[in-house]
Amino acid sequence: MESSRAVRRRARGSHRPLLSLALASLAVVGATAGGTVYVKARAHPGVGSVSSAATPSVSPSSATTTQEAAVAEPVVDFDERLATAMKAVGVTGEAKVSVAVLDVESGDSAVYGEGAFDTASIVKVDILATLLLQHQDEGTALTAREKTYATTMIENSDNASASALWDAIGRAAGLDAANERLGLTGTQGGDGALWGLTQTTAADQLTLLQQVFGDDSELSAASRSYLQGLMGRIEADQRWGVSAAADGSGWALKNGWLPRSTTGLWDINSIGRVTVAGRGYLVAVLSNGNSTQAKGISLVEAAARAAVSVYSGEDADATSAAVQKSS
Image (tube, rainbow, N blue to C red; front, top):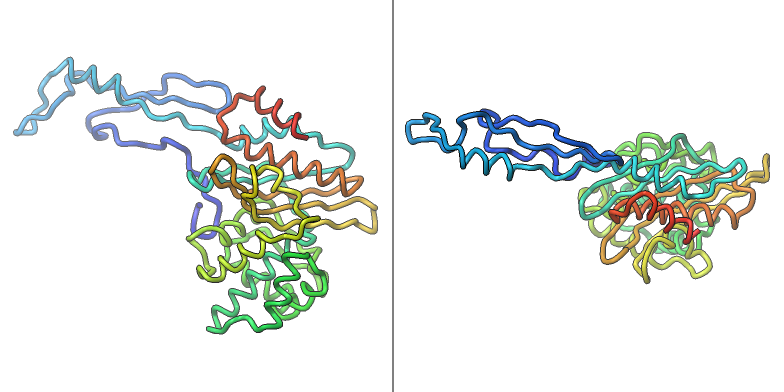
């Protein structure tokens, strides 16, 4: 994360000391497609070991060994990889999609697409995170009624429960205040009672997922565990979306779907944590302009698979083939 409240983008193999800046300099010796750059150390003439009097002594064999061994790991542009993978995802008609993904183990992240989207029901995770944060500040626990609302809101996506907790947190003002602390910079609560029209970005939803599933969080361990548990028990007919990228039962998610009355087109969103080959990923997929709910779900699931595929090390052709086959 750029901070405890923002998305980390760490390049693998970044800046490893090569003896010292006084003893070696760096030279770019090659590049490959896909944003991979290889850096190699060039030892200065006469640089080898340092005597006890701090006077350089010439050691050709030592200098040669240092020059050949000091090669940094490749730097990977995951945004570029994700953009390549998304070329294989069929986006038709007026549909628009944005994706953000983070490899939990390495901290590497990638984002594809721009702009704000309606949250629909994925905002329910944000609503509950806000409620939990408010209770933490007050040193109180959720009431029995709030727990009932929270369960049905997340597990069953119950709208009446969401409206009750939206009012409890102070609607948009409460959500926006909590999001400022959580590190969401591109999210704005919906007007009045319209929590489903909260505006957000894929990058912000990735930040929210880091707050829910990461250790470096404004939410306490108990609050995070509570939210994670609910997201891992979504009712059976709502187990679609980012979970399509997981293998087996390794997922926790929240989906959102909303037909817009003015256009008849669908907002389809999905956020959560998935496990693939024992490795965890946080994934957020937002879309709008889908002609049907089913097509929106297919788009979101294909985008989630594409997002996870960027960490597999496959080349662009293999990645495209895998995404096309799964979608």
